[in-house]
Image 1 (tube, rainbow, N blue to C red):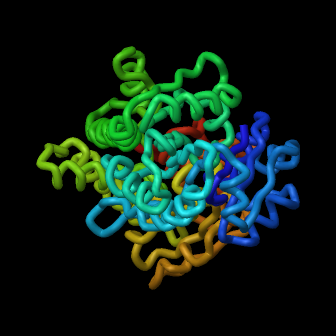
Image 2: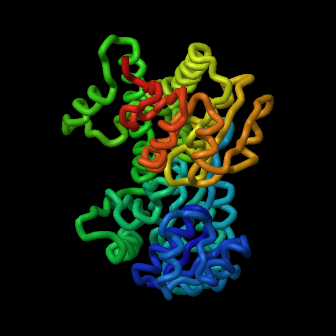
Length: 433
């Protein structure tokens, strides 16, 4: 099938590469000439594991700055554009609507049936209202009859985007009509394993599913961290033992049920806020989603207080942080728990390191602090009196890192994920008493 992917950013580029790698002739479009040129040079426009090899090993992928050419040479367009959060918690569709206006004007003169597939996360109700209206207004065609509309967001984690797209738990497919749903389902049948279900439903139900999945996952994370707080205050308690047993119940499951750092990143916090904002607007109750955020915010205060107490007890002069991104295997620091905790450590000397690289603007934005950006795990450990394992990164629990930690005399370690073995140094964990 001939496919166009509109937007070649951190999700669009991997999506285009995956579709092309699996045999679909795929044309990417972006207003960023650099991204387009890199794709055409068989190079990855964004950093993401496995993306470079995927692009290198397919002949089905190209990119263009000419939107009209892209639309006329594809049967279905995946739109994966930013839908940033507004102050009221809602997502704005302004970038999406602007692109849809341009695409719809082109489709006005296209005779062949074309499917517009919204891959960006939108507020429930968007597709059947403003998105549909813009398409019909500028294309002069009827959605569901002359032109197709689907809502098909991805369930992915940065650092694992390619794998998540190739081996998803399910494909969520909202459709304006059965014909459009069949077209999109046929795209995925060539991409995903045969045992992965394609869940087809109305546009509004798919929009609710997308935002609800992330809200439910954050609830599990906050619940585990609430247990960690409880276990720290009860003699002999261990949150990992507790959550391991709870997760054995098939009604609950172990995934995301682990005491540690709070959640962050570009999706979890904003989806929770959006869910609460929507519920408030329509008069539904969202106290659970709000409580999830309150518990998550409390973890920043809780861990900051623990670090300050350790500093006082052991006369710590320099605190080393291993891990600044919001999760392993990515360099994104948006809503990073590490940076939020660091902002609470006033007048402390800090040595910072992340295995995936550091956004200096984000880090240096922490004013009134003595911040040292280190060039390796080794140099971070050497200059620190306290090491905080802030991200559950495999490199931080490797034998090499453990040897470096143990070689530093009188080093205190705060293992926020309880992932390290017993150490010669003083090790402090979260969620244990």
